[in-house]
Length: 204
Image (tube, rainbow, N blue to C red; front, side):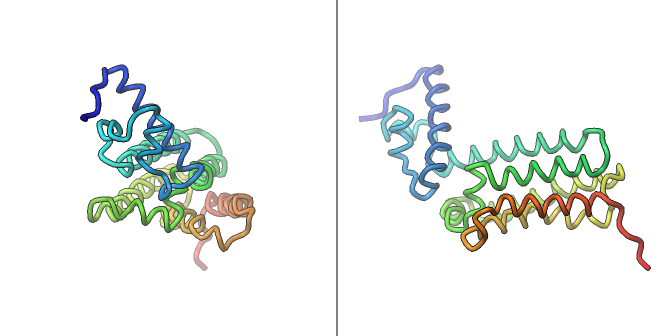
C-alpha cells in the first residue's frame, strides 16, 4: 500500500516533527543508532511515509546540518560587524564557534569520527572535501575582513582560519581528553583571544 497523500499543512507540520525527532534522537542515541522507523514513530507517521519527505535519514541530517551552519555563519557575521575593541569582537566570534562545536547535537556528529564516517559515506564523492574548502574560504574572508578593520593582525588570519577545524579535531578526540573538555577549551580560547586580537609583534 502506498503512503497516503498529505495536505500542504500536514506536510509542513510533519516535516517539523521529523526535524525535531532527528535532533532528539541524535542527542539521545547518536546518528548511527537513529533509524528511519524511530524517526517516523516519533513524528507520528509510518516508516513508508517518511520517504515522502526525505529520501534517507542522511538527507534529513544533512539538511539540518546545513541550516545550523547557515545560522552560525549569520550570527558570526553579525558579531564580526559589531563595534567594540578588538578583544571584544574577536572574543564574541570565537566563543560562538566554540559553543557550536561543544553544544549543538548535530555538529557534535561531525566531531565524532565514527558518527561522521557513518554520515559521510552516504554523501556524493567529493562532497566532504568541497565542504572543507568552502568552510576555509568563508573563515578566510571573515577574518580577512577583521584584519582590514584592524581587529586582528593580518599575519594571524591563517591561524584563525585553522582554529575552527582544530576545535572540531579536539572535540573528536574527547574520549581521550578530560571530562571537563568544555572548560579546558574555554580557557584556551580566552588565551587565544588575548593573543590574536593584539597586533603581531614586529620582527626583530
